[in-house]
Image (cartoon, rainbow, N blue to C red; front, side, top):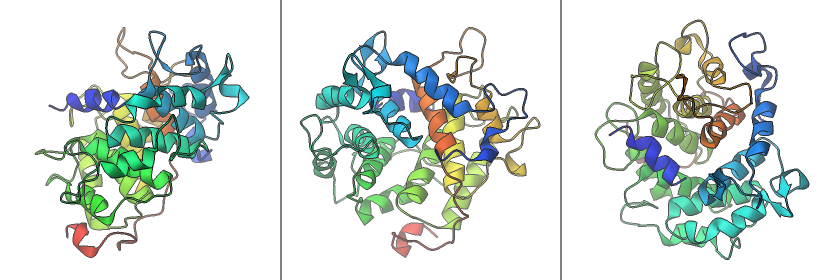
Length: 334
């Protein structure tokens, strides 16, 4: 079941501190400036219409992800540096946004967060009011923006926050209450065990956007992530099983930093390096991040590079102060 995490996420599919760069590590490609190298590689992936995709076919989901992360690291996706044949990356996203973003709140959230961060107007983009699409999908009985997929719910929530229209308290509470007994979160609302990808993502949303501060809930999640770390220092799709991959490792690194846990701390040191150093070992000489380090199966991919850049851009937040800024006390599950 855990293998579905990547499949579903892809289907829906600078704050870099000096301490992250780790220039002394011989095992890390582009250690002096991994972000610049990754951004340079993304330039080589832009298609003739300004979009990003696979097999020369522009993808709304991938273009939204790239626009988002470019803006996150200080690039201008609407500017000349990201314009091909008169089409900027942001303009290409506008051309692809409908009907992709109209299908569900998660996809609308993915586009909205990119548009807002890139300086566009999520309320009028590609013929859509993205905020309205998200809000129209809300179910007040459950607090969910997506009826079943928790990962897409997180995208809807972030899209609203980025757009200046914060999610409802019930929506944040539904996310908090979805924590599994093992301390993690699952990619769907109905599950029996957590997965590391979704857990990292939820920590980013709760701490980074909703302003939640609760060491009990977060400590359970961090314990879950620590127990699932592999001896190589990364994380895999299957909890506690290899091989490690760049996407899962990046999501964990971002989640840890969002809740005030340093992925370079002794707890996350494996094979003589911290989790960020491990993430950087997935960077190829081209600047791209490979998905997995297996000969012939590396698959240098846009998604792996986007996830890695998102993790590298995640600020190291202070440790939680253990009281909610936004949520009612009942949502803390303690």
